[in-house]
Image (cartoon, rainbow, N blue to C red):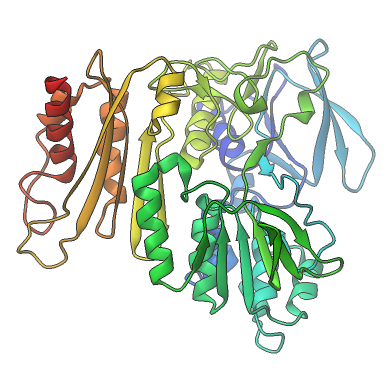
Amino acid sequence: MSDPFVVVGADAAGLSAASKFRREAPDREVVVFEKGRWISYAYCGTPYFIEGRIERMSDLLSLSPSEVDERGIDLRRGHEVVAVDPAGKTVTVEPADGDAFEQSYGDLLVATGGRASTGPFDVRGVDGAFTLHNMDAAAAIDAYIAEPDAYDPDRADVSAVDRERVERNAAMPAPETAAIVGGGYVGVEMAEALSGRDLDVHVFQRSDHLIPPFGEAVGERVEAELVDEGVTVHTGSPVKGLVGDDRIEAVAFDGETFPVDMAVVGVGIRPNTELLEGTGVELGEGGAISTDEHGRTSLPDVYAAGDCATARHAVTGEPAWIPLGLTANRAGRAIGATVAGDPSPVGDVAGTAVVKAFDMEAGRVGLVEAEAAREAGFDPVRETVTAGSRSGYYPGAAPTDVTLVADRDTGRLIGGSIVGPDRAAIRIDTLATALEADMTVPEVERLDLAYAPPFSPVWDPVLVAAKVLNGKLDGE
């Protein structure tokens, strides 16, 4: 029997690959090493757990260790892979409770994910200062917010949780004022979550509008929604540092300090690629591991997927690093099939993303900002329109802003964003499909989208935007 398929990392990409491989190649062994205790969890759901919309942390788990075992996967938690020898086709593994050993592989998947980037803000050892990129952080934040005599320890009801960290935070005085450093996905979602827990929330954003990848039109409406809900938004206000030795006391910005007793730093993530240092592996955008259309790296029989790997951009055709959940799951599944003998492309990425801010929904795809489009070699033409989400006479209709970006020379749609309070986010899937199909703006305008008063006006907002942008292209 050939050497096993070895997977490093037991979350979205890793377990998707192992599960698909096991189904397709039941006679071949698959071993998954995970350095921690958590596996297969829904990181994107953590803000809603902190807010209290989700009652138990176990609700965020996709697979339990016993379910992984039932699939015939050799899962070894508490086993950190610390080195890869591509020539010898082995990995060095350090168990948490034993001696290091070498494991041979026939094929290797590196699915080590990413980690929160803190920039100049060191949250280690400072009570009340957090990043949010794993379940233990979510459990600690949830405990820290609660009044010491009111915390329900059953909320963090998973054996993998860092119980000592949870209990320590639960014993601290509950905060009243929170600073969120960074107005991206994490910042916006955490603003709603902490506001829902009755904190006075302040969001500090370096640039002039929130969630920059979504474009200015979306940023403005999201900011207005946060303000309407009682959140204070400080745009154009880069935070210089966190103040406090043992516990957070303030954030420093614009030459002054603002007192807080809680801070969440959400300024981005970094790919975990240290495992392959010294192997000569090729790195790409964002310092992530370069991969081809099947997830292969530059090392023989070594694959990479998820937040640590690149993928091809659907609009530019160039390598891109866009760490999102579907990308990881889809790539892992494809690699599992490929290693099992059925070559399957991991698929292109377009940065399709959605975010919720109280009652406001937003979505984006492709190249939204003109600067990014120009850097990719396009001559961007953009238009933003406001249209109703349903027939105007039907209850619930609401203004929906749609921004479309096209290439002037070809008329090809290259990006777009949508924002509004009534099912705006799901409409981004229409634009994502159009981008994948390399559709032009006139072709988007001619799409036969569904119409019924409870769901959409005769002219869906996407069609209205395409019609206006097409007119602009024709007139130039």
